[in-house]
Image 1 (cartoon, one colour):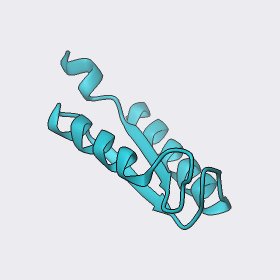
Image 2 (image 1 turned 180 degrees about the vertical axis):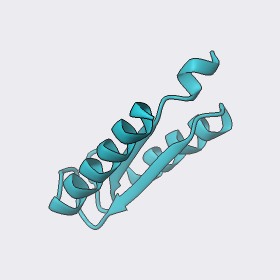
Image 3 (image 1 turned 120 degrees about the vertical axis):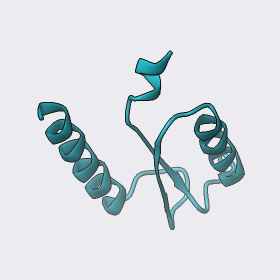
Length: 71
């Protein structure tokens, strides 16, 4: 449905992820894009974890989404 395709999606993946292969993240992003979703993609020099840069990127993304929603 078109409403769900308008939902913003943030995706982040570690380049050195040893739990979920990086290629799976890239493939899932591609499938979502082919289905009409807009993806804000980020990859990070980390494994299967969270880094401070990712937290900062998520924060900026959320602020942007909330400001866009409010207008």
